[in-house]
Image 1 (cartoon, rainbow, N blue to C red):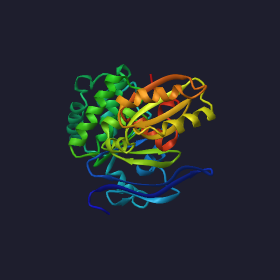
Image 2 (image 1 turned 90 degrees about the vertical axis):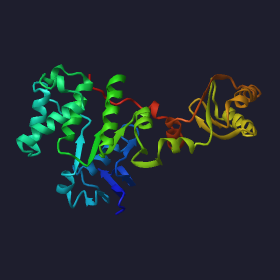
Image 3 (image 1 turned 135 degrees about the vertical axis):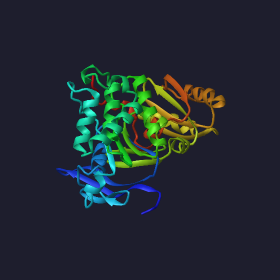
Image 4 (image 1 turned 30 degrees about the vertical axis):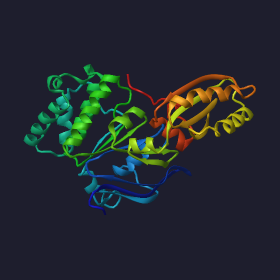
Length: 326
């Protein structure tokens, strides 16, 4: 095992009733980084996470946490990790402090040590003033902070967060991001699953884009966006027939600043060197194609959604939203 690797996964697979939820997945997570598993609902993110936290055995392949096999050394692995589930395990009739005391007992943490840890964690997640309020009066963001505090109680070296900001308002999401960054500064390795593009882009050092159980691309958000090669121009046509799209693609491929063209729903995704000459020429070329009626044009710098489209053929934004908690 590499000295810099906190997690190593090799050829991991999981089959449920002949359905492959995870297929031949391999990745490495370095010490101290925030690593994201990005993909739509049902992509295999949570299944992968459950294997890594030892609650689910893989069908094929291996995974190690700090050198310990997640199947053969499950008890050791559990002492090294913390986990915050997507579904919140909050008892609405307990206070925040009572929740932490209950989890401390489950982790068999001595009483005085538990009290000291709880005081530090409440300060870390800014719940000191609300620690003795019953949880039913907490906002969604406060409940998520309490979840994170519970996951940190055993002093984990690696923290797994399953959809950490699912269903939260914008300000609560930003607050949670800040807390996650603070944990990284303390030396904790963090693995998160998310289907929020901005979360992966702003928070993660590296991400693996997962779709239909397979890793489609992996790297830093910056490198993945740079790999697209150019800025994006999205054309939307009012009558995007295959014949018209083929004619337009052929015509646009002759322009010197066009790097790549991919079909998208009702139009084309075009990679260009820059907007100054590209946009006027693209519009002029479109107007020369008989029956080609331009419904809209959008220019943007490379985005993670463009990366997702390039590697999966569809937009993550078009996926149905995950369920949220009110």
